[in-house]
Amino acid sequence: MMISPKNMRVCLFDGIHKNGIQVFRDAGFTDIHLFPNSLPEEELYKEIANAHIVGIRSKTKLPRKVLAEAKKLLCIGRYGIGVNNVDLSAAEEFGIPVFNGPFSSTRSVAELVIGLIFSLFRRIPELSADMHRGGWSKSAKDCLEVRGKTLGLVGYGNIASQISVLAEALGMKVIYSDVRVVLPLGNARQMPFEEVLANADVVSLHVPGIPSTENMMNAKTLCVMKQGSYLINCARGTVVNIPDLQSALNSGHLRGAAIDVFPKEPKSKDEIFSCELQGTPNVIFTPHIGGATEEAQAALGIEVSEKMKAYTLLGDSSMALNFPQIIPGSIAKETHRLILIHKNEPGILAQINDVIAEAQANISAQILKTKGSIGVVIVDTEKEIDDAISEKLSSLSFISKCLILS
Image (cartoon, rainbow, N blue to C red; front, side):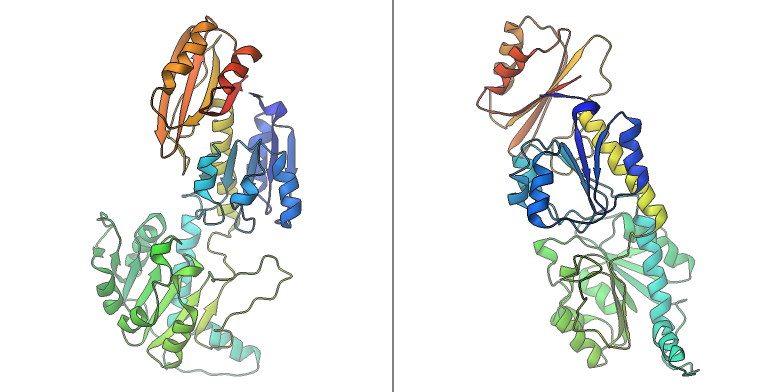
């Protein structure tokens, strides 16, 4: 398949920021289709079937059955950090690299967590709601300073490490747990998970939504938390068992909680939000807005679109989550580039080179990388790759995609 900006269909769902759209336009892409929201499954099938590049935020889901219909799809961009709405293993199997934006929204999430800490410690939502009803509950009861308190971070990645620095600047002590040994920033200290829970005045969760973290905050672990402490979840909705949290709040063991992500979230603004914790006065809800700032969305638009542009124009998969990491560089003058996605089996490179040699196409550069079940070969030749060579390579049983960059 010959690919160039002029013959690739770009479908961007969930209201991708204009900066991300402009990246494609500036690169010469013209067939760009914009969808402000997610689509019903049948409509999504139809759009995905003809798309070469797909960009989504959190609302659109790309499970295996949807990806199986995407015969032309070259890559997927998730304009955010988490990729739990994309079946990564299926995408890998179908030779589709998935790119995300792990950096652009980290500051926005960090600032939200700091804001939630202040709001919980000073009971701001409760007091504000009371005043809207005409009340005047001026009191120091259950209102605390953050200075001198201990913040516990569960997970110490790009977001949590920024929160760590901000919290220390406020005079807080910071402790954290992580599955890895992670170098702390500032005076933060790493310790086991349960010790973080037992010693923190407020615990903030920053772990991925994977099987090992599902319901990690449950009746048992919530009981380990310090009496009168707070819980913040801006990670993934599956991490906290909501009924168990409700019990810990109702019993008075926890003083309050702030939740930005939920096990079940509305698919649109028209759908009613429902949660067992609704009406609990010491609970703050926010509608999954951790990375929802204008600055973050503008930066994400550029970050993710640039990665997909680099892959489709150069074969650069260095930032893909589920794909062999290749940085091929620019295409030299008077050379032509092939991208061959194949099953990860022995002896494949020799057979590919035999086809190219038979065509008397001199190879000027070649890279091969494998990951899991697939491999990628990038070949730069001094002879233009015509349909005959492409068809012969595509006919090899182990080749899943043969792309020619023009």
